[in-house]
Image (cartoon, rainbow, N blue to C red; front, side):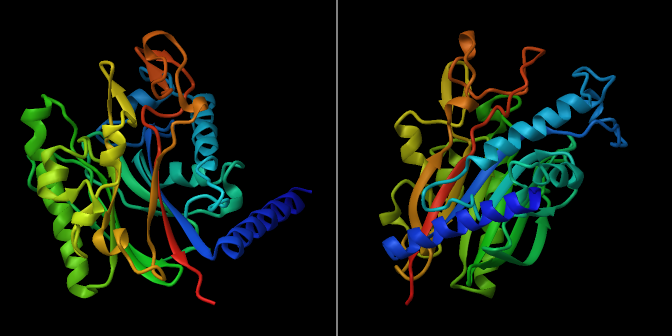
Length: 345
């Protein structure tokens, strides 16, 4: 019975996708990012004790019930990263704040998204908190060619590596750089050089991709711990607010205008930030109509992802707040861009 249900669901989704392409003459794919807010298992397996608060005897009393609640909640959120043009969900989902590969394996196995058969790219990085970035992808749309991981050595502490995944997005070569840049610990201005260094590394990776393949589309995504107008993004990456100002090997940040309109992905002291960005190269921002090119950006701030209590009302509904277990999702909203191209008949 379950197999019949899954087959029927896939058939309906495929028919919806075909119908959209046939009706509009346009193919569409989603590229998403989601900070999963401390997705730890319950096992104390970090040799430096970095995960002890996420164990049954730790501060958060992180047991199997809470862990599987978290997996279910995140899978439900990911299952809602759909549009009329992308009923099967995003082709690619970058993630951050994951403890290890096992938690991603448990996540993609959840019934809410198991039908998508999401595959995993993951690498254990030297981060002092014991968290990594990763990439989930639907093999129907994206085929991985190679994965490289790049350590940020220009900061005086261990932080997340940057993951670069190169592959074929339905026949077109793209490189995805997944990031979780250093935090604002110590103050935004004082810590800015750390994120500027991360941005410089990101730019170096992109340039290295273009030396191999000048036509490759490059997408930079992640929790950047800075807003689009901050120095790391606007100056070091030189990611522009308007795509009209971007050349093929420059960068366009579609989330800049969204923040200007008061839309954010996380809130702090009654103010919105938009740290969770997806920045794309000029050859994707302004591509030929028969090649993948940018259509729109989305902050998935659905009502079910929002807190409804007191001073947190409207903010992302997180797993813990002020020491209390809320059984939420994440302290960040997921983001997404839609790429489109003309169907070649």
